[in-house]
Image (tube, rainbow, N blue to C red):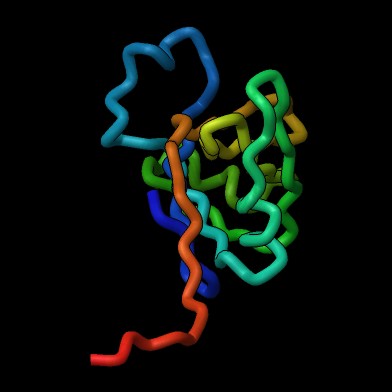
Amino acid sequence: MELSENTPLSLPLFLLNDQLEQRDMASPDLIMEVVLDETLLANLCQNPKAEENISINLEDYQLHAQQAKFEALLNAQHQAQLLLNHGPVLSAVLSLDNDQVFISPPMEMMPTFDLGEEEDS
């Protein structure tokens, strides 16, 4: 996965339960979208050590229900975090006040930068 500034990042979220391992990864319960601003991208440019992870709380994100049974969750109280592990590997966690948790599959990523330099031909 490549990341660049001012682009949307869409992450599939799945309800964390006993059936998670049998789920079809092409059919998430929710989609979380977050725009990668300069601050968030700077946080994602870190590569924690093998035994460490970095948790980034999200303030500005949107949720989209992919199944009707989860539409009510869009108006419920929740908080979202991006988790960065060694690799770097990115995943997301959405926690609801009713103790339900949704997670995204871990994805390898590589931030890219536009430095405003053009190649001379």
